[in-house]
Length: 317
Image (cartoon, rainbow, N blue to C red; front, side, top):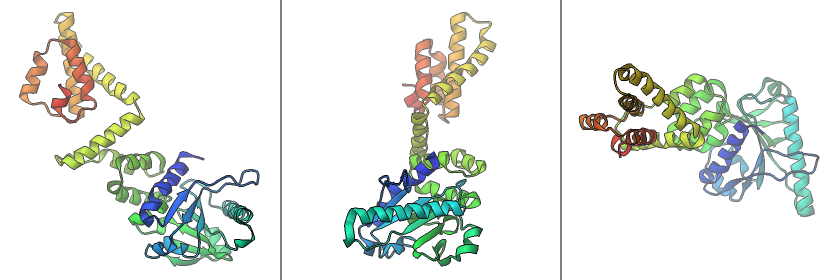
Protein backbone atom coordinates (compact mmCIF):
# COMPACT_ATOMS: atom_id res chain seq x y z
CA UNK A 1 0.00 0.00 0.00
CA UNK A 2 1.49 3.34 -1.07
CA UNK A 3 1.63 6.54 0.94
CA UNK A 4 -1.10 8.32 -1.10
CA UNK A 5 -3.47 5.43 -0.31
CA UNK A 6 -2.53 5.57 3.36
CA UNK A 7 -3.14 9.33 3.40
CA UNK A 8 -6.58 8.87 1.83
CA UNK A 9 -7.48 6.18 4.38
CA UNK A 10 -6.24 8.33 7.25
CA UNK A 11 -8.42 11.18 6.01
CA UNK A 12 -11.46 8.90 6.03
CA UNK A 13 -10.54 7.65 9.50
CA UNK A 14 -10.08 11.16 10.92
CA UNK A 15 -12.95 12.94 9.16
CA UNK A 16 -15.84 10.47 9.07
CA UNK A 17 -16.98 10.70 12.69
CA UNK A 18 -16.70 14.51 12.72
CA UNK A 19 -18.59 14.98 9.45
CA UNK A 20 -21.35 12.52 10.36
CA UNK A 21 -21.67 13.62 13.98
CA UNK A 22 -20.74 10.14 15.14
CA UNK A 23 -23.30 8.46 12.88
CA UNK A 24 -20.58 6.60 10.99
CA UNK A 25 -16.94 5.75 11.63
CA UNK A 26 -14.04 4.26 9.68
CA UNK A 27 -12.52 0.91 10.60
CA UNK A 28 -9.44 -0.83 9.24
CA UNK A 29 -10.62 -4.20 7.95
CA UNK A 30 -9.57 -7.64 9.14
CA UNK A 31 -7.98 -9.92 6.58
CA UNK A 32 -10.52 -12.09 4.73
CA UNK A 33 -9.61 -15.76 4.42
CA UNK A 34 -9.12 -16.08 0.68
CA UNK A 35 -5.36 -16.07 0.45
CA UNK A 36 -5.18 -12.30 0.94
CA UNK A 37 -8.38 -10.54 -0.03
CA UNK A 38 -8.60 -7.26 1.87
CA UNK A 39 -10.51 -4.12 0.96
CA UNK A 40 -9.28 -0.61 1.76
CA UNK A 41 -11.70 -0.09 4.65
CA UNK A 42 -15.26 -0.01 5.96
CA UNK A 43 -17.75 2.64 6.90
CA UNK A 44 -19.53 1.26 9.97
CA UNK A 45 -22.95 2.90 10.20
CA UNK A 46 -24.41 3.27 13.69
CA UNK A 47 -26.95 6.07 13.13
CA UNK A 48 -28.18 6.06 9.52
CA UNK A 49 -30.96 8.52 10.42
CA UNK A 50 -28.34 11.16 11.14
CA UNK A 51 -26.81 10.83 7.68
CA UNK A 52 -29.95 11.69 5.73
CA UNK A 53 -29.21 15.45 5.77
CA UNK A 54 -25.69 15.02 4.39
CA UNK A 55 -25.02 15.14 0.64
CA UNK A 56 -24.63 11.98 -1.43
CA UNK A 57 -23.00 9.58 -1.11
CA UNK A 58 -23.34 9.83 2.71
CA UNK A 59 -27.13 9.84 2.49
CA UNK A 60 -27.06 6.50 0.64
CA UNK A 61 -26.34 4.57 3.85
CA UNK A 62 -29.97 4.57 4.99
CA UNK A 63 -30.44 0.80 4.77
CA UNK A 64 -26.87 -0.37 5.51
CA UNK A 65 -24.89 -0.93 8.67
CA UNK A 66 -21.58 -1.24 6.82
CA UNK A 67 -20.14 -0.15 3.47
CA UNK A 68 -16.98 -1.46 1.80
CA UNK A 69 -14.77 1.40 0.57
CA UNK A 70 -12.27 1.02 -2.27
CA UNK A 71 -10.02 4.01 -2.99
CA UNK A 72 -8.43 4.61 -6.41
CA UNK A 73 -6.17 7.64 -6.35
CA UNK A 74 -4.44 9.43 -9.21
CA UNK A 75 -2.26 6.92 -11.04
CA UNK A 76 -4.19 3.85 -9.85
CA UNK A 77 -5.81 1.53 -12.39
CA UNK A 78 -9.56 1.95 -12.83
CA UNK A 79 -9.97 -0.61 -15.61
CA UNK A 80 -12.42 -3.49 -15.58
CA UNK A 81 -9.97 -5.78 -13.81
CA UNK A 82 -9.63 -3.28 -10.94
CA UNK A 83 -13.40 -3.05 -10.63
CA UNK A 84 -13.84 -6.83 -10.71
CA UNK A 85 -11.25 -7.22 -7.96
CA UNK A 86 -13.09 -4.64 -5.88
CA UNK A 87 -16.32 -6.57 -6.40
CA UNK A 88 -14.54 -9.78 -5.39
CA UNK A 89 -13.44 -8.15 -2.14
CA UNK A 90 -16.98 -6.94 -1.55
CA UNK A 91 -18.33 -10.43 -2.09
CA UNK A 92 -15.64 -11.93 0.16
CA UNK A 93 -16.62 -9.53 2.92
CA UNK A 94 -20.28 -10.48 2.47
CA UNK A 95 -19.35 -14.16 2.85
CA UNK A 96 -17.25 -13.32 5.91
CA UNK A 97 -20.15 -11.50 7.54
CA UNK A 98 -22.55 -14.33 6.77
CA UNK A 99 -20.13 -16.77 8.41
CA UNK A 100 -19.67 -14.54 11.45
CA UNK A 101 -23.32 -13.65 12.04
CA UNK A 102 -25.02 -16.84 10.93
CA UNK A 103 -28.37 -17.40 9.22
CA UNK A 104 -29.96 -14.45 11.02
CA UNK A 105 -28.00 -12.01 8.85
CA UNK A 106 -29.76 -11.52 5.53
CA UNK A 107 -28.20 -8.19 4.55
CA UNK A 108 -26.16 -7.17 1.54
CA UNK A 109 -22.76 -5.49 1.67
CA UNK A 110 -22.60 -2.34 -0.50
CA UNK A 111 -19.43 -1.31 -2.31
CA UNK A 112 -18.43 2.32 -2.86
CA UNK A 113 -15.56 2.67 -5.28
CA UNK A 114 -14.04 6.16 -5.02
CA UNK A 115 -11.98 7.34 -8.00
CA UNK A 116 -11.27 10.60 -9.80
CA UNK A 117 -13.64 9.99 -12.68
CA UNK A 118 -16.07 7.54 -14.25
CA UNK A 119 -14.11 5.48 -16.81
CA UNK A 120 -15.33 5.21 -20.38
CA UNK A 121 -15.40 1.41 -20.32
CA UNK A 122 -17.82 1.46 -17.38
CA UNK A 123 -20.15 3.90 -19.09
CA UNK A 124 -20.27 1.68 -22.16
CA UNK A 125 -20.67 -1.70 -20.52
CA UNK A 126 -22.65 -1.08 -17.33
CA UNK A 127 -24.71 2.05 -18.11
CA UNK A 128 -24.26 3.61 -14.64
CA UNK A 129 -27.11 5.81 -13.45
CA UNK A 130 -26.19 9.23 -12.06
CA UNK A 131 -28.34 10.09 -9.05
CA UNK A 132 -26.33 12.99 -7.58
CA UNK A 133 -23.27 15.03 -8.59
CA UNK A 134 -20.39 12.58 -8.91
CA UNK A 135 -22.47 9.61 -7.67
CA UNK A 136 -23.47 6.67 -9.90
CA UNK A 137 -25.31 3.39 -9.37
CA UNK A 138 -23.55 0.67 -11.34
CA UNK A 139 -25.89 -1.91 -12.82
CA UNK A 140 -26.84 -4.67 -12.41
CA UNK A 141 -26.03 -4.34 -8.70
CA UNK A 142 -27.60 -0.89 -8.49
CA UNK A 143 -27.70 0.30 -4.87
CA UNK A 144 -25.05 -2.26 -3.91
CA UNK A 145 -22.35 -0.77 -6.17
CA UNK A 146 -21.80 2.98 -6.21
CA UNK A 147 -19.06 4.65 -8.21
CA UNK A 148 -18.00 7.97 -6.66
CA UNK A 149 -16.38 10.26 -9.27
CA UNK A 150 -14.47 12.69 -7.04
CA UNK A 151 -13.73 15.16 -9.85
CA UNK A 152 -17.47 15.77 -10.21
CA UNK A 153 -18.26 16.21 -6.52
CA UNK A 154 -18.88 19.72 -5.20
CA UNK A 155 -16.26 21.30 -2.95
CA UNK A 156 -17.82 20.79 0.47
CA UNK A 157 -16.27 20.25 3.87
CA UNK A 158 -18.40 17.15 4.47
CA UNK A 159 -17.11 15.53 1.25
CA UNK A 160 -13.37 15.99 1.89
CA UNK A 161 -12.68 12.24 2.42
CA UNK A 162 -13.97 11.58 -1.11
CA UNK A 163 -12.41 14.68 -2.66
CA UNK A 164 -8.85 13.51 -1.94
CA UNK A 165 -9.29 11.05 -4.84
CA UNK A 166 -9.45 13.92 -7.36
CA UNK A 167 -6.86 14.22 -10.13
CA UNK A 168 -5.52 16.81 -12.58
CA UNK A 169 -7.02 20.29 -12.53
CA UNK A 170 -9.81 19.13 -10.23
CA UNK A 171 -7.18 18.11 -7.65
CA UNK A 172 -5.43 21.49 -8.00
CA UNK A 173 -8.76 23.23 -7.45
CA UNK A 174 -9.44 21.11 -4.37
CA UNK A 175 -5.96 21.73 -2.94
CA UNK A 176 -6.33 25.50 -3.18
CA UNK A 177 -9.81 25.34 -1.65
CA UNK A 178 -9.04 22.98 1.22
CA UNK A 179 -5.66 24.36 2.37
CA UNK A 180 -7.09 27.17 4.55
CA UNK A 181 -9.75 24.80 5.94
CA UNK A 182 -7.47 22.15 7.44
CA UNK A 183 -4.64 21.98 9.94
CA UNK A 184 -1.06 22.62 8.77
CA UNK A 185 -0.15 19.00 9.49
CA UNK A 186 -2.97 17.71 7.26
CA UNK A 187 -2.09 20.19 4.50
CA UNK A 188 1.53 19.04 4.59
CA UNK A 189 0.34 15.45 4.21
CA UNK A 190 -1.74 16.47 1.20
CA UNK A 191 1.23 18.27 -0.35
CA UNK A 192 3.50 15.27 0.19
CA UNK A 193 1.23 12.49 -1.02
CA UNK A 194 -1.33 13.78 -3.54
CA UNK A 195 -0.27 14.19 -7.17
CA UNK A 196 -1.20 17.84 -7.70
CA UNK A 197 0.71 20.04 -10.15
CA UNK A 198 4.12 21.35 -9.17
CA UNK A 199 2.94 24.94 -9.60
CA UNK A 200 0.07 24.51 -7.13
CA UNK A 201 2.29 22.67 -4.65
CA UNK A 202 4.79 25.54 -4.77
CA UNK A 203 1.99 28.08 -4.57
CA UNK A 204 0.67 26.51 -1.37
CA UNK A 205 4.14 26.09 0.14
CA UNK A 206 5.55 29.49 -0.70
CA UNK A 207 2.52 31.60 -1.53
CA UNK A 208 1.89 32.84 1.99
CA UNK A 209 1.55 36.60 1.87
CA UNK A 210 3.62 38.68 4.25
CA UNK A 211 1.40 39.72 7.10
CA UNK A 212 1.40 40.95 10.67
CA UNK A 213 -1.76 38.98 11.51
CA UNK A 214 -0.81 36.97 14.63
CA UNK A 215 -3.11 34.05 13.70
CA UNK A 216 -1.53 33.67 10.25
CA UNK A 217 1.96 34.08 11.68
CA UNK A 218 1.19 31.36 14.23
CA UNK A 219 -0.04 29.07 11.44
CA UNK A 220 3.11 29.71 9.39
CA UNK A 221 5.24 28.96 12.44
CA UNK A 222 3.36 25.68 12.99
CA UNK A 223 3.94 24.65 9.38
CA UNK A 224 7.64 25.46 9.72
CA UNK A 225 7.93 23.47 12.95
CA UNK A 226 6.11 20.48 11.44
CA UNK A 227 8.53 20.49 8.50
CA UNK A 228 11.52 20.64 10.83
CA UNK A 229 10.11 17.83 13.00
CA UNK A 230 9.50 15.65 9.94
CA UNK A 231 12.89 16.46 8.40
CA UNK A 232 15.37 17.20 11.23
CA UNK A 233 18.25 17.38 8.76
CA UNK A 234 16.75 20.62 7.40
CA UNK A 235 17.80 22.43 10.59
CA UNK A 236 21.43 21.52 10.05
CA UNK A 237 21.09 22.34 6.36
CA UNK A 238 19.80 25.85 7.08
CA UNK A 239 22.49 26.40 9.71
CA UNK A 240 25.26 25.10 7.46
CA UNK A 241 24.08 27.17 4.50
CA UNK A 242 24.14 30.26 6.69
CA UNK A 243 27.62 29.38 7.88
CA UNK A 244 28.89 28.90 4.32
CA UNK A 245 27.51 32.24 3.25
CA UNK A 246 28.90 33.80 6.38
CA UNK A 247 32.31 32.30 5.63
CA UNK A 248 32.25 33.75 2.12
CA UNK A 249 31.39 37.19 3.41
CA UNK A 250 33.74 36.85 6.36
CA UNK A 251 36.66 35.85 4.16
CA UNK A 252 36.19 38.91 2.01
CA UNK A 253 36.34 41.21 5.01
CA UNK A 254 38.43 39.11 7.33
CA UNK A 255 41.51 38.64 5.23
CA UNK A 256 42.81 41.92 6.56
CA UNK A 257 41.74 41.12 10.14
CA UNK A 258 43.11 38.73 12.71
CA UNK A 259 41.93 35.11 12.75
CA UNK A 260 39.40 35.52 15.60
CA UNK A 261 37.98 38.74 14.20
CA UNK A 262 37.57 37.05 10.83
CA UNK A 263 35.56 34.23 12.43
CA UNK A 264 33.41 36.77 14.29
CA UNK A 265 32.66 38.59 11.04
CA UNK A 266 31.79 35.26 9.42
CA UNK A 267 29.49 34.25 12.31
CA UNK A 268 27.70 37.63 12.34
CA UNK A 269 27.08 37.41 8.60
CA UNK A 270 25.67 33.87 8.96
CA UNK A 271 23.36 35.00 11.79
CA UNK A 272 22.07 37.95 9.78
CA UNK A 273 21.44 35.70 6.78
CA UNK A 274 19.26 33.26 8.78
CA UNK A 275 17.34 36.12 10.39
CA UNK A 276 16.69 37.64 6.96
CA UNK A 277 15.45 34.30 5.55
CA UNK A 278 13.12 33.94 8.53
CA UNK A 279 11.93 37.53 7.97
CA UNK A 280 12.90 38.43 11.53
CA UNK A 281 13.75 42.12 11.33
CA UNK A 282 16.67 43.64 13.18
CA UNK A 283 16.23 46.97 14.91
CA UNK A 284 19.19 49.39 15.08
CA UNK A 285 19.67 48.26 18.69
CA UNK A 286 19.76 44.59 17.58
CA UNK A 287 22.29 45.41 14.85
CA UNK A 288 24.49 47.21 17.34
CA UNK A 289 24.24 44.31 19.79
CA UNK A 290 25.31 41.76 17.17
CA UNK A 291 28.14 43.96 15.95
CA UNK A 292 29.38 44.62 19.49
CA UNK A 293 29.32 40.96 20.54
CA UNK A 294 32.85 39.62 20.60
CA UNK A 295 32.02 36.15 21.93
CA UNK A 296 31.96 33.62 19.11
CA UNK A 297 30.00 31.02 21.10
CA UNK A 298 27.22 33.54 21.82
CA UNK A 299 26.85 34.49 18.17
CA UNK A 300 26.73 30.82 17.15
CA UNK A 301 24.05 30.16 19.80
CA UNK A 302 21.98 33.07 18.45
CA UNK A 303 22.45 31.59 14.98
CA UNK A 304 20.99 28.20 15.96
CA UNK A 305 18.14 29.82 17.92
CA UNK A 306 17.26 31.93 14.87
CA UNK A 307 16.37 28.80 12.87
CA UNK A 308 13.16 28.20 14.89
CA UNK A 309 12.60 31.47 16.79
CA UNK A 310 9.29 33.29 16.34
CA UNK A 311 10.79 36.74 16.96
CA UNK A 312 14.12 38.53 16.84
CA UNK A 313 14.16 38.93 20.62
CA UNK A 314 13.69 35.16 21.02
CA UNK A 315 16.57 34.49 18.63
CA UNK A 316 18.93 36.83 20.46
CA UNK A 317 18.21 35.60 23.99
